[in-house]
Length: 303
Image (cartoon, rainbow, N blue to C red):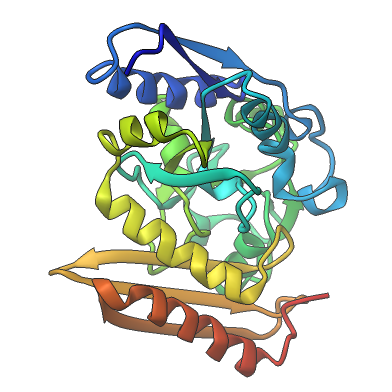
């Protein structure tokens, strides 16, 4: 590659910067000139007191970064895949991923109490309807309250007494070396994660063949397979921030296990499907599960 340098665009949070640094370190193995990290402030980073759906949806974390990518202010964008809209932005391409971090959910409580031992009416902070409804399956005698902000902000709110416990993605906790804070880890069978959880996505311009070739060098093939499988289900469901759906694909003995859990808007109805398919058939399987769940739910998962 003849370029003098590369610019990677990322959100400015501590976690996002670490993810971008990981991408830079991988790229340095194949690109030996300067690689700059550019912090980009997104609307999602500025507004912490409302659900994402109330202020514009998942695109709030990626729209400004994508704008810089389209305008050629940056060459590459790094995102947490779970924060990206399901439909790709025109003229951009997201098809390269780092090795998946933990997809699991964890609980952090003020007194290091496990979920099942929390006192009735304890306040549990969660950022999504999916987590809230999944937790309500286990316990209905707790109070579930919206929590937004980066990991440090959420933990601070917990420690200040605003919540008795909070539920977070384990991937971020691991990257920030905060494992000592964990009170309990849920299995992916216990709480099915959102699509793309734990996967770092790398985006570029669709017509930038040089960058596309470069990114292929650092792509993790297993992550690509499961990322595409999980997001295909979301596309069929037309999933957005308010869609309470868990989607998890896992490669096991050369085949893909795909589990999907979908809730009605009010959380009272649950629909679940799990299928195993060959890797080269996973797209068909993902679409099939999505279509079956749409039919079973009769659209009750959408407002």
